[in-house]
Image (cartoon, rainbow, N blue to C red; front, top):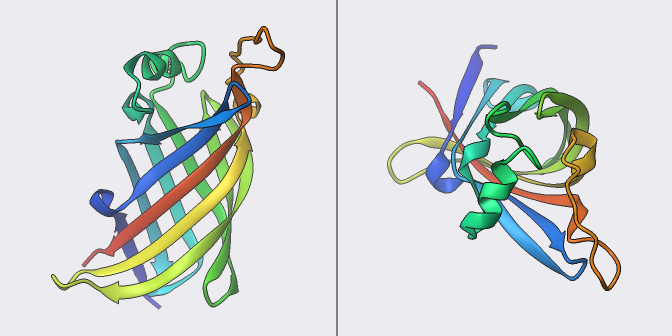
Length: 177
């Protein structure tokens, strides 16, 4: 079977995350600039090759001071590590609409294997004739596993920034001719 290339549709995709702030509420953010590709056997996505890269400088939490701090050496160190990347080692079909995605997530030069459940929305043709596939990914990582260690103790106990990062990723890919 011939391989099929799929490219990200950035106008219909979002790479989002949430982190506890002051052990109390969540702060949400997203990456504004990223790229992702899928190479599959036709329209069969089991064992597809999936790659992603996100530009750290595009991080947006709706607060310029916080975004600047996240880009600094305290967190992502964008000057020395401009991108985070993901490369799948496995994309396994669980049932008709569910997959398990396994691969290496690299942040600040540190690669760790991660595993996420993926909801497969199916394939459709949009009103302009483009063939698209939709994927939703939710998962959790511990930011300290990638050296994102900065924190500040609170006078009332606890810390300013939670360790767990919850990912909420909505993706549309377009089939390439």
